[in-house]
Length: 332
Image (tube, rainbow, N blue to C red; front, side, top):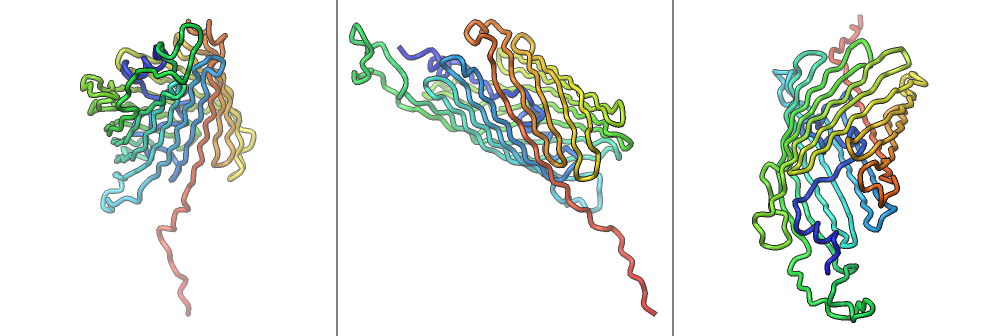
């Protein structure tokens, strides 16, 4: 018999990757988030190792980069462009079911005023799903007493990988205070708009379900050295739903220009699934976060409460703006 992990992987509707620190992977939340930040260039990465205490652990990685593109709308400085690239990798189960995807992201920004920016983004991804039968066991390989890997499984797998293209779109809105560190960002996304076929056989009905997301993150400065951080993320994909709420406090140890240091402590709660303590360190252009899922779902019988370790990092670059007006001193 094929292991249950493989049966699920090949027959049920697929799910996208999910992360406990979504602020380190904004392009997986909304294509409209591309370039929607204060700096000019941003590099991001997330690594997640989940359920190492059970026989079928999960490994997830996501990396991305996005930037603001020099505007071609010279006569209208309210409109600007942004672009980005995104790579996702996920592996799970004895069948080593993998999902690898790479794509590009584009967005157009509209500057409502000096504090608010609205964006619309689109994303196109090339994705491959694959599995291996090397570690799988079948009924026909049991000789009555023990498992014999040399015996013919009598199983025929015509295809062990599938490649498809899917298209997504999303909105983003950001408002930042000119007088403080306070800012808020909101995004919504519609992923897999074209509903690509994800089956390893010719089953045309095995469509990848559309994923709908809504997210908001806010930073409120409550003291010259203290910020209050909060956020929420909701996702729906087919029969699956996820709601993640986040809160924390950030203390600014140093505010010296170019040497800023801040420490953030927080807790997230994924409803019905996990409590997630987390810590972040902000140093100059770097932001690094570590979280750990404490499983509270019915699956904690197998996991004993152990969930997943996750590490995220962001590095930003701010370009030096040229002097707009230059007046030479006349020589007499």
